[in-house]
Image (cartoon, rainbow, N blue to C red; front, side, top):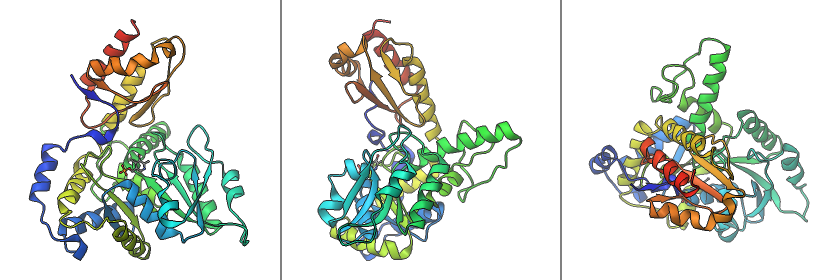
Length: 374
Ligand SMILES: *Cc1c(COP(=O)(O)O)cnc(C)c1O
């Protein structure tokens, strides 16, 4: 059995998705006449409550276009130390845009202290870069940012004249987790309201008919921002692609930058059709990935020396302490010999997705227990 938990990017397109790709009407998106790209852009923009959207090959390019559309040379953006668009994208905003990052240490729940954001905003003075943008990420390392915090941080940014960008590579994972929280609260407080989104409400498979609409929560998060980037190639299961959503004006600038970055694609409707299929069919099922991460966490928590962080979405981190730590270097090779792929050394990362099921997770648990001889 092969169980690849390195990332949720490793998924294969499902048969339904492949069929949708083959059936997609195509044009040339550089002439803006690929009907499948146009339909996807309209769909995701409407879904998240924005005027417009732009389809891009990667989340990296999407974040880059967003930062460069918001900022000029010599501007800066405030961002978390471990945020993808600062830490893991080759410093692109600085390299290609001369936009300076102002990274801030974050708290263990992924939030930046409001006081730290406030203190990082530079006065209008020739000594300083112009602080132009606050960039947040949700989910952040698999963690759902608290909605109150998102509201407060983005309100603070607005009150200080900053634009707000969300790296929502896993926005729909955040929405699924948030919908479950809302449902749990509603369950505690009385009958749910059952509000539905524009696609008629794909619901968490966990929540059945009660409360917590995923698209409603995705929009509630997205609407705190001027731009939102979403990945289709992560948990949503599409082979390629991201969308940047925002105002028409912002996206006109982003479109020019996408062109400069070499992101003007042609018959990209093939890819857009996969993304569109994912939005129609593979959002609610993200709840299954979250449940599998919890199943894995639960099973691993009995092993001595493993410090298991309760997962909030589809990413599980496990820290190795003694006695497990002493054998850390042998662990991933042992897993690989039994068909299990993960990443890390003293801090392991397991990511659940479309191509993993409960039997796969139980296999991982058996191989882990075997290694630690429990
Ligand atoms: C994966 C990811 C991206 C974009 O990655 P690409 O590989 O360029 O598509 C951006 N932000 C976050 C948080 C991600 O996880």
